[in-house]
Length: 538
Image 1 (cartoon, one colour):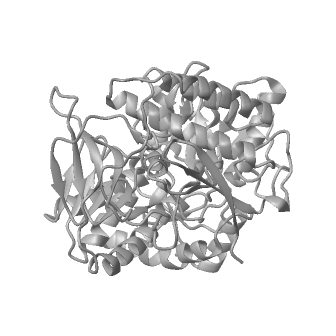
Image 2 (image 1 turned 135 degrees about the vertical axis):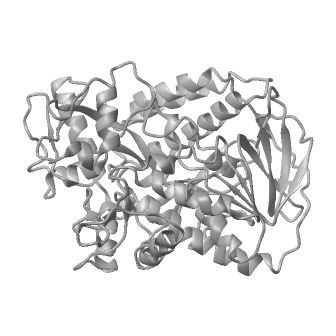
Image 3 (image 1 turned 90 degrees about the vertical axis):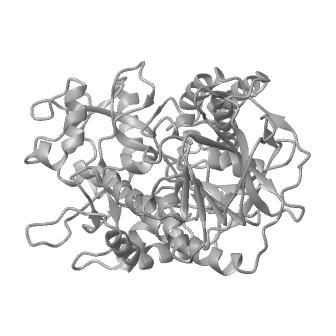
């Protein structure tokens, strides 16, 4: 399966191609450069416009007194609701502190306490203070700044901005040896070319735009996961879409990227109130307002369903100097007519993070030779059914190093292979379908799901699939990627007949031991989906 696109009109080569400029892509580029390989870094917008810079809370790592990787591991496994890959989690928490140290060595500056030590806070699901933050609530922006400075200073990293990657290229042996991409030129929309390399790493971030309301930027259309599916790679855990419980509510007609109210706000003492201004998280979970995200999101949705309200409230009155501790959140509220110093903040869940993605091993390798994935694009198994807060940035750091190590061992034995023409079906959905896809997914495959809602969404998607286009353009390619992702998410959500982590089936409200297994999806050359089950390693 491939996107309908013009034939490539130009070629560029490099040792390694990295798609995406968030923490996963930038860190992987720097780690690979440490081995001396040339890198081509491709990013869809400007190099600083990925999801990383929007991260408010921080990075989780066991660095504080009385904390340990073992305790971080226990909290991660608990949040993952039984579906974490234990070896991946162990790698994350034990290699995390060193990965953070490398980030600091590359110039990232984190907030410090009066003692001079790095300031650590808590977020939902963590039993210890282990969240590093920068600029109060601008952690992602600081990390992005530091990594971009290091990448820009490296002559061995070539960056192509405003380039949408279309499909993987394969050699006669079936190994991925490059990608096709469209560079959005000055007044031109036909800039399709090909980039050739010995390995391709997907770090395209999230897929939040598949829903009507999301914290993800507009570029988060899941291009990497969709590309991997069309290339025949396995994807897993795609039914586990984490909805951030506290996103600033902007009204019933709002859509696209919504302002996030970091979990760290509740970590500093904010509480949730229902429409009757009653605190409702006490008794729901031992951690109350700091329960894992899936618990909080479900509790909020239950309150909204019960009262008919479109949001709940966040009371930040107990946080001293709120405007100084969370300057960006404070300004965002002010910009939308809310003064946190005197007003309750209206919040509701919105699509935030995909725990699943391209199924990879501990070295970041997909099921297709030569194709790797890192960060939110990947499913390492670290997050299980529900990501623990602030583990995502850490995952990008840790697995970037693992990918670089594996590529070094592999590339020195490989010769560059030439791509061959693949005979497969072509697909292109009309650009106008994007809004229809997002609305259908939010209604039928959002926080609360049932067989009826999911089957209705599947039927709606089938109708959208009939709206084929013969006019390739960025908007059509993005709509097609979202359509592909919506299909696979709904398929997996229908298969998993239980409620677990961030997957809530109202018609199957309980967890079941029969579902302590991973759903792995695959797409054939004609676009037909199939699935298998992956038993959890003990």
